[in-house]
Amino acid sequence: MRFLKYLLFVVTFIILIGLSLPEKLHIPVRGASVHDWHQETFWYEPWGSSGVHKGIDIFGKKGTDVLSASGGVVLFSGQFNKGGKVVIVLGPKWRIHYYAHLESVITHAGQWLSSGQPIGTLGDTGNAKGKPAHVHYSILSLIPLPWLVTLETQGWKKMFYLDPSKVLVE
Image (cartoon, rainbow, N blue to C red; front, side, top):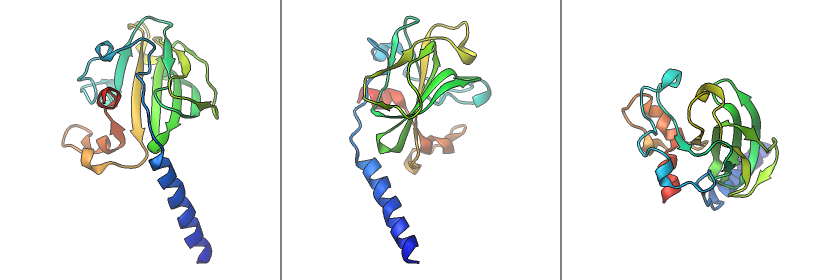
């Protein structure tokens, strides 16, 4: 029983440390502004087999640097069927930053990143093949945010997703 109390204390402490870390977000494309994505594509439907668009697409010239929007550790750097070349970063506040459709990736799992550090380049890989170069950028919260739930399609999932266009502009 004593061990379980100790374990609970340690886990709680780690979670609180993660939540207290400051988060300074950058627009994750070099030279991009709020005009390089459509403000209303977050949770837009219908959106292919995923039902709704759980992020934003930031457009630019193919080969432009994609930057880490937040400091953190790379959890995955590789290939997915739909996302093509992707990078997944765990940042402060226990948030996962997902970057998809990259032309190239220059990170590896376990790598520590600073906010604004290059992670790859804009592309059209995965199910974006043949479309204008962009990065699909999503922010997933590992800590549920129940006040974000809506009655929209898949609205219950919104407690895990932040609208990047609102977070990046603030």
